[in-house]
Image (cartoon, rainbow, N blue to C red; front, side, top):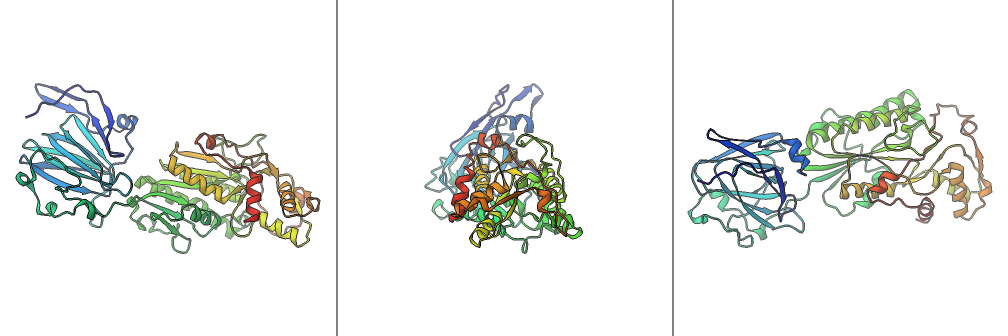
Amino acid sequence: MSEIEFGKSLSRTETTIPGLEIFDLPVHGDSRGWFKENWQRDKMTALGLADFGPVQNNVSFNDAVGTTRGIHAEPWDKWVSIATGRIFGAWVDLREGPSFGAVFTAELDPSKAIFVPRGVGNSYQTLEPDTAYTYLVNDHWSADASYSFLNLADEASAIEWPIPLAEAEVSAKDLAHPRLAEVVPVAPRKTLVIGSGGQLGTALGAEFEGLGNVEWTTRADFDLGSAALADARRWRDYDTIINAAAYTAVDRAETPEGRSDAWAVNAAGPAALARIASEHGITLVHVSSDYVFDGSSDRPYREDDVVCPLGVYGQTKAAGDIAVATAPRHYIVRTSWVIGSGNNFVRTMASLAERGIDPKVVDDQRGRLTFAAEIARLIRHLLEVRPQFGVYNLTSDGATSTWADIARTVFTLAGHDAARVTGVSTEEYFASATSPVAPRPANSALDLSRVVDTGFAPRSGDELLREYLVS
């Protein structure tokens, strides 16, 4: 029997397999026996362990020395530690990617634990009688869960078992697993894009083109208001949800029917997604709006400014932001004056210029354009870099402009006289409106410091506008 090493400090060591981490655990013992904290969330996440959200605790008891199990790659993360005895563990990376086939081995006793990420094959051979190990997992066992397996005797992995497999206790099922060359790699967890038919969804389609783990849905095939949403997918198979769906008809939102639709899409829908993301450890990406502010600030709005929306649209977007922020893993991308595919302000001004129409355009609202392709680029950046969760402002870079300024720039770039554009106040522009008009924030400028600190470089608005008009 081996002696347990008492009094070690809690520490974390990375292995040769990405995400596979060994922990030394403090074990306190005397003549009566020993005690350890097998799992302590605050201490272990402070050392860098992923906050993986365990939901089930299992115990495996092994009577005889040489009992060998594996190699199994399950669709969940595992925290494995020894309750009594000692094991030899072998782990093989079966995930799709450059580390596929990497091998790591180690002996574990009660003073050590290991975090095994989803898709890494794990196997254990007992080195002492009456060995028991426990493992926490972050999904409930399911008959329809998809596993990958590797043969314990795989020649490419060349695991040096302390007790030869011919002398070990191994199940016939484990002996029949495929060799590495025949293993189907475990695909990464999926990304679900909601609202793929809109201008942001279209931009995301271009940004994530060719990635096989991205699923696309439209409002017609994915109902955010469905009571069955919680069971609409096997959510543990998803790493990220990108919510590109939004109700953006700001004036119609002031009508009884529009108000109902806006609250359903912009507030209730994100709240439902936040509940799913919280329960299943999913990263939720959501797009917000400058309309959550009243526009009275004399400086660009920062991410931590208190929301104070003027109209129904802004109120529903603010409610959606508050709901999304309840998900532990969330990114809220706050934007203004979005320009993407389809009909929009820039395309309208270019069309008026070509048709010889001289427009009156609002000149008492200031902000910056945000191009949908740039929102998609930032979302990909956030998911790759994984900065601190929270809100990130995004617009184009450069000086703020009024809508009239932008219209004049469009006329100029299209080869027409910018003087044909006449600036008017918001009040004058809507003076003859016969249906409800939503209040607009006078200042829509957003501070970009935080997003720049993540390593993202917002592009010049003038440059983006020029590229957009020739695309």
